[in-house]
Image 1: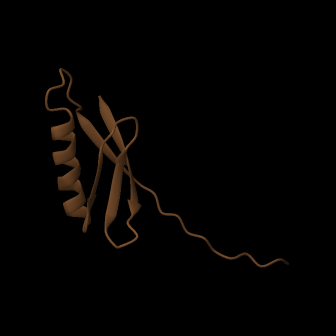
Image 2 (image 1 turned 180 degrees about the horizontal axis):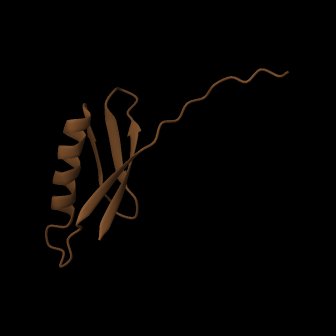
Length: 71
């Protein structure tokens, strides 16, 4: 099993991670802290599950709005 996390910039700084298809959410001030928190959150979420995920994919999404002037 592979988990996919959508990573976005947090409004107050750092990153927010949300697992697609599972109720797992965590955040971190740095990328390294986020990675550690994702691993901890996955471990806790699947603590009693018979099947454990093998991989967690971190998919970083960055939204940017830029004005486009009419020609």
